[in-house]
Length: 273
Image 1 (tube, rainbow, N blue to C red):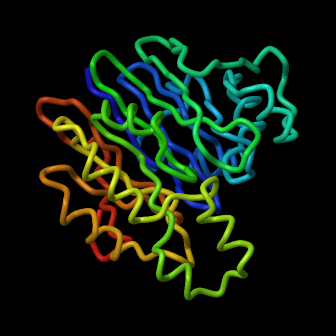
Image 2: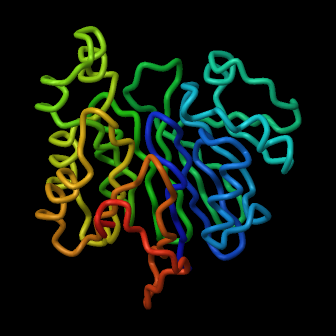
């Protein structure tokens, strides 16, 4: 059975990732407004009726901005840790709030969603692996460093959303104040292109077919730069730059005859996917 995945948006202005099979799906993070989430899914031919739950990685506003309205409108369970719920100032009907525990899968239909801790400057941050049968998709963003948990889970993936937030030279020479630069590269901020590439080169599984470069900085990265950097080392994997302005196409993962179920071309970056 295939998984179908898309980034509805990826960046400091909002993060939301869709992973599903033919019957059910989940959203990882809900950093877009409810209306914008609906609009982008409609353009892709995706139905909110298939979405069975929302999983929240941490409490920063670009990951939770739309969750309250989405949960209420569609009666969607929200899986979130206690600390993330409190620090995010969330107010969601009690019957829709569910806790997850690291390394213990949550089963939703044929989907198995497993969280694991990550390094980020949040109260209780987690990344996720979504599995359907033998197919596994990882959502790995907002990472301060490459830890053992990340390596172990990345090695399992058939596809992954992987943060490549900043180019070291652009950050160093950019307009950000020193304290913000220190926060970004300080071990609990964000992953650089170099760190993400090293993980990709060293630990990419032979069966990994799609890599979504995610959470690019608007000021400290360049889509063409990072695409070319990774594509040089892709060795058959498809490199997609996840936009901070629009959704990517939907990609089938694990299909014997891969055919995109979305027909709109993703040409934001001069045709680079």
